[in-house]
Image (cartoon, rainbow, N blue to C red; front, side):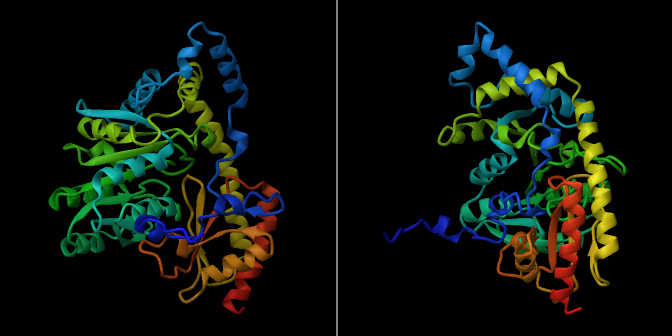
Length: 398
C-alpha cells in the first residue's frame, strides 16, 4: 500500500543514528554508539525489594489506577527539594512535572511553543532526538557553532538579530550530547542575558549534569532564571534506569499547567507504580552515594578510552576530554567523511554515530564521531578503539 504520511512526519530526519539502539543490540558489536548508562549501575536489588513491598500494601491497587498528569506527589516533592537545595533551581512561581524521560519533556514543550516555520537556535552539533522532535513540530532549526566552553556567543547574537520568529534557544549545558562539552558559568549568564535582550525562551536540556567526576561544578542555567524564561528538562534515566522512562520538567507554573492539559492528548501520565518505586528508593537510600558509585565506574571507563584513543589514533584526530557524562567527541580533520568512517567501523563490528546525525537542519557533513564509553566493557573499549583507529586511517588515507 502507498502510505500517505503527514507532512511533519514525512519531513522528520531519517537514519543518521536513528537506529542506534538497534545497532548496539547485537552482542557481537562493540557498542560505542548508544547513549545507554551501564547496567552495572542499576540498583536492581533495592528496586525489587521496594516493588515487592508496594505490592503487599493495602493501598497497592491505587498505584495501578489513573493518577494526576503532573506526577506522583512524593516523587515530585523529592525532586523539588533536591533541585532547590543542591542546584539552586525552583522559584515560588515554578512547578515540576514528571515526564516520560527527558525526551518527552522536550517534546511537550516544543509542541506547546512552536508554530510551523518558527525558529529554534540550537548548538551545532546537538542531540539527534531533539532534532527529530523539532522537525516533526515544524520548526526551522538554525545551528550555532559549539566551542569547548559552550555556544559561540557572537554567532548566537548574530542569529538572534537576523532570524525572524525565534521561539527559543536549545542548549545542553552540561556534558553535552554529542561533544561532552560543558557550557561555562560565564557563558550561561551571557546566554540568559541574550535571551532577555531578544525576548526568547531557553530550553535547557540537562540529563547528564549529576554525572560529574572531575572538574568544577557548574549550576544549571535554570538557577539564573528570574522571569520564567528557562524551561528545564531533566532525566532519571542516567541515575536510576532508562527502562523506567522517567524524567521531569521544571518551569513556570503557567507553562507546566498548559503542558499538563496538552499531555491529556497523549499518555496522560507516567507509569504510576514505577513513580512510587522511584520515590521510595530516593527516600530510603542515599542517592548521592549511588551517583558517586556510578561516577567512579564511568571515570575509569572514560580514562581508559582516552588512553586508548591517545595511543592508537593517527595524527590530525582530536577528541574531547569531558569531566562527566557519557560521551567523547572524536574530531576528524576537515574534509574527512564521518559517515564513511561509521560505515567502515560497522563492517568491522564497531558501532559509532557519525557527526551528520547531530547537524541542525541536516543534509550537511560533520567530520566528527560520537563515542560512548559507559556501555562497553573495558575489553570492548580496548579492542574497539584499536579497530576504529585502523578504520580512521583508511578513511584519512594514511
